[in-house]
Amino acid sequence: MTVIVVAAVIVGPGGRVLAAQRAEPPALMGGWEFPGGKVDPGEGEIEALVRECREELGVEIEVGERVGGDWPLSTGGYVMRAWLARVASGTPQAREHLALRWLEPGEYYDVAWLAADLPLMEAVEKLLAQD
Image (cartoon, rainbow, N blue to C red; front, side, top):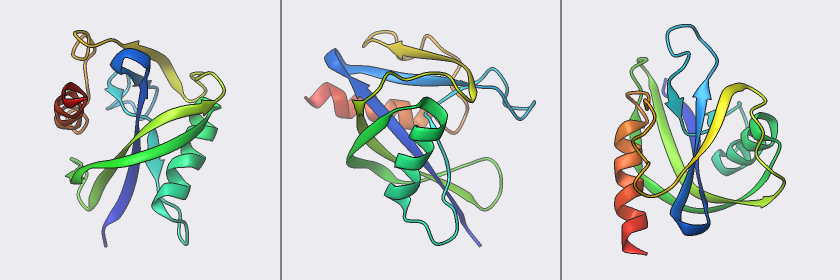
């Protein structure tokens, strides 16, 4: 069975993108990702995305367009689905991450993205360049 993981590509003014540094598990600790998490049973993907951002970052988000299709994760049976989003209310806080960082255009690769998130960042960069 495929496990769906949702990710929020939170975009701020000027094309800034929010990156989050993993605190766990040990194998991923210190790597950078887009915030999100697993979809709970009976939960919709957008609903899960909003919940995860509320829990992990303390913000309410407005979800925009989906980015790409299914992004395979290195763990077998997991796929990531990502959406562009913006902060509707609140200020992002690192509740479950080691750190958060707003990356300006030109800084998108200044962090060590996790292998699963790097191709997503590349796709996001192309999308934002079209705006």
